[in-house]
Amino acid sequence: DTGVSQDPRHKITKRGQNVTFRCDPISEHNRLYWYRQTLGQGPEFLTYFQNEAQLEKSRLLSDRFSAERPKGSFSTLEIQRTEQGDSAMYLCASSLVGSIDQPQHFGDGTRLSIL
Amino acid sequence: GDSVTQMEGPVTLSEEAFLTINCTYTATGYPSLFWYVQYPGEGLQLLLKATKADDKGSNKGFEATYRKETTSFHLEKGSVQVSDSAVYFCALKAGGGNKLTFGTGTQLKVEL
Image (tube, rainbow over all chains, first blue to last red; front, side, top):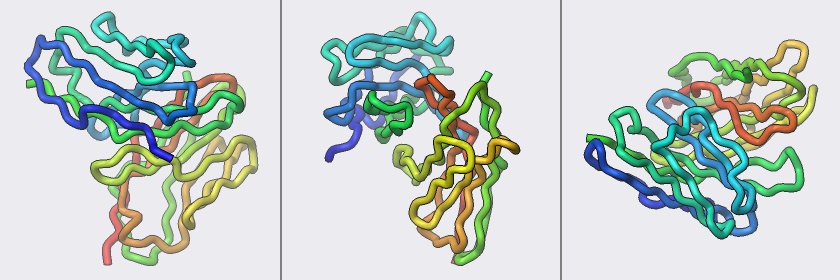
């Protein structure tokens, strides 16, 4: 059973550039979540999908952020015109629908550093 | 809104010592409660969970009991090992909701 896979593991970019991250969930999982974790803090919810539908977005997700899950499998998170404050670990998680008790399984994250 | 408060770290213990990491929560309805662990350079791993009052979650020698009357979910282990050194996160999922709300994490360091 492969876990949640995220790519890249690390991304360094200059302020103002666009970046895109990819998440591949556990294959049978139909829910996919994005979280952001800054140093010394717990993860904060950004958005989640059920299949290809984006069902909830946090106020943290400004209009520079966009997430997609076009075929209900992998997802991408794009940040346009990056800012210093976007530096963080971006975590993806997946889970099964069927019971409210289904745990979320996390990937190792993509660490974004803005120069 | 929903929130989770954890004791601040780092917590430094000697091997075989008893561990308690306090966690209290505020939530509407009846949340499910979780402990996740994050080892250096890795993602979060689910350690244990409890879904209703008085449930006890347990895994790898760790335990936590869902206490509705005190809105708490404290993590305990009777005898810690060096390999338990990590950051521990308490989290809740509100009843009917989907997102996890995390505490700020507690770093545990276990020394020989």
